[in-house]
Length: 169
Image (cartoon, rainbow, N blue to C red; front, side, top):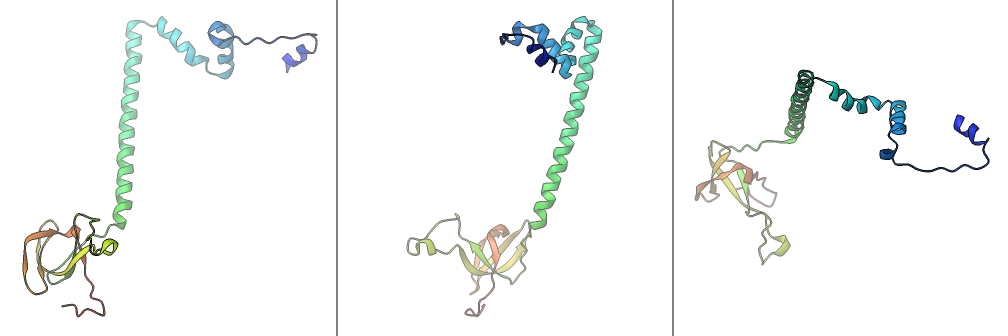
Protein backbone atom coordinates (compact mmCIF):
# COMPACT_ATOMS: atom_id res chain seq x y z
CA UNK A 1 0.00 0.00 0.00
CA UNK A 2 2.64 2.52 1.04
CA UNK A 3 4.70 1.70 -2.03
CA UNK A 4 1.80 2.54 -4.33
CA UNK A 5 1.19 5.85 -2.55
CA UNK A 6 4.85 6.77 -2.95
CA UNK A 7 4.75 5.82 -6.64
CA UNK A 8 2.10 8.47 -7.30
CA UNK A 9 4.56 11.19 -6.22
CA UNK A 10 7.10 10.33 -8.97
CA UNK A 11 6.93 11.12 -12.64
CA UNK A 12 9.09 8.15 -13.82
CA UNK A 13 9.69 4.83 -12.07
CA UNK A 14 12.06 2.00 -13.11
CA UNK A 15 12.03 -1.50 -11.58
CA UNK A 16 15.17 -3.64 -11.72
CA UNK A 17 15.21 -7.28 -10.68
CA UNK A 18 18.21 -8.24 -8.55
CA UNK A 19 18.95 -11.91 -7.75
CA UNK A 20 18.80 -12.90 -4.08
CA UNK A 21 22.45 -13.86 -4.06
CA UNK A 22 23.36 -10.26 -4.91
CA UNK A 23 20.93 -8.69 -2.43
CA UNK A 24 21.28 -10.62 0.83
CA UNK A 25 19.93 -7.79 3.01
CA UNK A 26 16.63 -7.61 1.15
CA UNK A 27 16.43 -11.41 1.15
CA UNK A 28 16.98 -11.52 4.94
CA UNK A 29 14.26 -8.89 5.46
CA UNK A 30 11.84 -10.83 3.27
CA UNK A 31 12.58 -14.06 5.15
CA UNK A 32 12.07 -12.37 8.53
CA UNK A 33 8.76 -10.95 7.32
CA UNK A 34 7.60 -14.37 6.12
CA UNK A 35 8.69 -16.18 9.29
CA UNK A 36 11.49 -18.18 7.62
CA UNK A 37 14.41 -16.23 9.03
CA UNK A 38 14.75 -18.54 12.03
CA UNK A 39 15.80 -21.35 9.70
CA UNK A 40 18.35 -19.15 7.96
CA UNK A 41 19.71 -17.91 11.30
CA UNK A 42 20.27 -21.51 12.40
CA UNK A 43 23.44 -21.64 10.35
CA UNK A 44 24.77 -18.52 12.10
CA UNK A 45 23.89 -19.98 15.52
CA UNK A 46 25.79 -23.19 14.71
CA UNK A 47 28.96 -21.17 14.15
CA UNK A 48 28.65 -19.71 17.67
CA UNK A 49 28.25 -23.09 19.40
CA UNK A 50 30.97 -24.88 21.31
CA UNK A 51 31.94 -28.40 20.25
CA UNK A 52 30.06 -29.91 23.20
CA UNK A 53 26.89 -27.90 22.47
CA UNK A 54 27.04 -28.84 18.80
CA UNK A 55 27.54 -32.54 19.65
CA UNK A 56 24.56 -32.41 22.03
CA UNK A 57 22.37 -30.83 19.33
CA UNK A 58 23.43 -33.45 16.80
CA UNK A 59 22.76 -36.22 19.32
CA UNK A 60 19.26 -34.84 19.90
CA UNK A 61 18.71 -34.70 16.15
CA UNK A 62 19.81 -38.31 15.76
CA UNK A 63 17.45 -39.37 18.56
CA UNK A 64 14.60 -37.52 16.88
CA UNK A 65 15.32 -39.21 13.55
CA UNK A 66 15.52 -42.61 15.26
CA UNK A 67 12.18 -42.04 16.97
CA UNK A 68 10.66 -40.97 13.65
CA UNK A 69 12.00 -44.11 11.95
CA UNK A 70 10.61 -46.35 14.70
CA UNK A 71 7.24 -44.61 14.49
CA UNK A 72 7.28 -45.03 10.70
CA UNK A 73 8.11 -48.72 11.05
CA UNK A 74 5.16 -49.20 13.41
CA UNK A 75 2.85 -47.44 10.94
CA UNK A 76 4.11 -49.68 8.13
CA UNK A 77 3.43 -52.78 10.26
CA UNK A 78 -0.07 -51.51 11.10
CA UNK A 79 -0.80 -50.82 7.42
CA UNK A 80 0.48 -54.26 6.37
CA UNK A 81 -1.72 -55.90 9.00
CA UNK A 82 -4.72 -53.88 7.80
CA UNK A 83 -4.10 -54.91 4.18
CA UNK A 84 -3.68 -58.56 5.23
CA UNK A 85 -6.99 -58.48 7.15
CA UNK A 86 -8.79 -56.97 4.15
CA UNK A 87 -7.24 -59.54 1.81
CA UNK A 88 -7.92 -62.48 4.10
CA UNK A 89 -11.61 -61.55 4.34
CA UNK A 90 -11.95 -62.38 0.66
CA UNK A 91 -9.71 -65.46 0.61
CA UNK A 92 -11.56 -68.72 0.94
CA UNK A 93 -9.21 -71.63 1.58
CA UNK A 94 -9.80 -74.66 -0.60
CA UNK A 95 -10.44 -77.82 1.33
CA UNK A 96 -11.28 -81.17 -0.18
CA UNK A 97 -12.28 -84.44 1.48
CA UNK A 98 -11.84 -88.06 0.50
CA UNK A 99 -14.42 -88.89 -2.16
CA UNK A 100 -14.84 -85.30 -3.44
CA UNK A 101 -14.76 -84.84 -7.19
CA UNK A 102 -12.27 -82.21 -8.40
CA UNK A 103 -10.87 -80.64 -11.54
CA UNK A 104 -7.11 -80.28 -11.98
CA UNK A 105 -5.74 -77.21 -13.76
CA UNK A 106 -3.82 -77.68 -17.00
CA UNK A 107 -0.32 -76.33 -16.45
CA UNK A 108 1.28 -74.16 -17.66
CA UNK A 109 -1.65 -71.80 -17.56
CA UNK A 110 -2.75 -70.38 -20.89
CA UNK A 111 -1.54 -73.29 -23.03
CA UNK A 112 -3.84 -74.09 -25.92
CA UNK A 113 -4.45 -77.31 -27.80
CA UNK A 114 -4.01 -76.68 -31.53
CA UNK A 115 -7.12 -78.78 -32.26
CA UNK A 116 -9.38 -76.61 -30.08
CA UNK A 117 -7.69 -73.19 -30.33
CA UNK A 118 -9.20 -70.66 -27.96
CA UNK A 119 -11.78 -73.23 -26.84
CA UNK A 120 -9.05 -75.41 -25.34
CA UNK A 121 -9.96 -76.78 -21.90
CA UNK A 122 -8.29 -75.25 -18.84
CA UNK A 123 -9.00 -78.17 -16.50
CA UNK A 124 -8.55 -81.98 -16.52
CA UNK A 125 -10.89 -84.32 -14.83
CA UNK A 126 -13.00 -84.96 -13.02
CA UNK A 127 -10.91 -86.92 -10.53
CA UNK A 128 -11.80 -88.30 -7.11
CA UNK A 129 -9.83 -87.37 -3.97
CA UNK A 130 -8.31 -90.62 -2.70
CA UNK A 131 -6.24 -89.31 0.20
CA UNK A 132 -5.75 -86.00 2.03
CA UNK A 133 -2.11 -85.20 2.89
CA UNK A 134 -0.48 -82.46 4.96
CA UNK A 135 0.26 -79.09 3.41
CA UNK A 136 -2.82 -78.85 1.18
CA UNK A 137 -1.75 -81.87 -0.89
CA UNK A 138 -4.08 -84.52 -2.25
CA UNK A 139 -3.73 -87.95 -3.84
CA UNK A 140 -6.19 -88.33 -6.70
CA UNK A 141 -7.62 -91.18 -8.71
CA UNK A 142 -9.48 -91.36 -11.97
CA UNK A 143 -13.19 -92.23 -11.79
CA UNK A 144 -12.37 -95.77 -12.98
CA UNK A 145 -10.11 -96.28 -9.90
CA UNK A 146 -6.66 -95.72 -11.48
CA UNK A 147 -4.58 -93.82 -8.90
CA UNK A 148 -2.07 -91.11 -9.72
CA UNK A 149 1.45 -91.78 -8.37
CA UNK A 150 2.09 -88.17 -7.29
CA UNK A 151 0.27 -85.77 -4.98
CA UNK A 152 -1.44 -82.64 -6.29
CA UNK A 153 -1.30 -79.22 -4.66
CA UNK A 154 -4.79 -78.10 -3.59
CA UNK A 155 -4.00 -74.72 -5.13
CA UNK A 156 -4.30 -76.38 -8.56
CA UNK A 157 -7.62 -78.08 -7.87
CA UNK A 158 -11.21 -76.91 -7.85
CA UNK A 159 -14.42 -78.59 -6.84
CA UNK A 160 -16.28 -80.48 -9.56
CA UNK A 161 -20.04 -80.17 -9.66
CA UNK A 162 -21.73 -82.64 -12.01
CA UNK A 163 -24.07 -81.07 -14.52
CA UNK A 164 -27.48 -82.46 -15.42
CA UNK A 165 -25.83 -84.11 -18.46
CA UNK A 166 -23.25 -85.96 -16.33
CA UNK A 167 -24.06 -88.91 -14.16
CA UNK A 168 -21.36 -87.73 -11.66
CA UNK A 169 -19.57 -91.08 -11.54
